[in-house]
Length: 283
Image 1: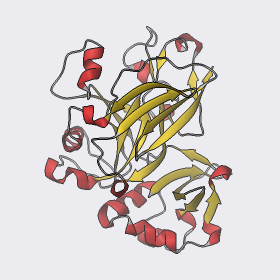
Image 2 (image 1 turned 90 degrees about the horizontal axis):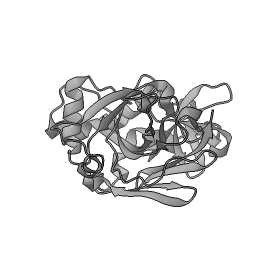
Image 3 (image 1 turned 180 degrees about the horizontal axis):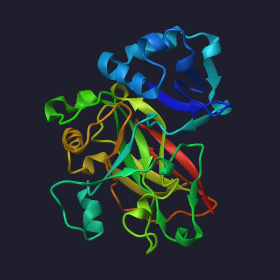
């Protein structure tokens, strides 16, 4: 199942289910508020506790009035209304070696500001000062369905409702410098949807690629991650209480061969999870 957040003509955000080129608007179904809630975070929590059937039943009973064409709406990032994108660094040994960095016992971590988050229908905006050397990165995002604090590894995966694709854009320039070069507006494309966990066969063995203008500029695999997903959930939940709709970006495999080109586009792809394409513009 592919879950999305999209905006209507008045700018209001709705949760939905993407089926081919049609979206079932969960806020327009008669049973949604009762069974799954009308916000993205509560929909994810319902799936985490009851399984995908919690939403599938609602979708199956939806009327024609509850469906909209994908081409008629803008998809936004699949981070819940009060959710956070929590990013990790240093999760891939090869990337650390590539950059000559020490291998630490735990990953680095930071919370991405909301202004950095964009969806597939939004561009990456490069200030002229960083447009010559800004790198994309493809990362697996773990999406939290059931919140918690100090979650044990044995129970960790029951808190993961699904996965999404994150492009962790970084300005490899002197300005604005660490760590601000990862926090700039539009520098964290995420989406285009959340793929529920039951649709992903093995999240720790997925091919990851970056394409720019049709040319492959990065190839890796989640198999190169040096931390288990269970450890990541335990570790992050020991720092802060996770909430339904939070996304944890688990780091990138490195080996990106080219920087972003103004006027072009970049596509981050993870097998079985999805791909997100964004235009690149200079401001």
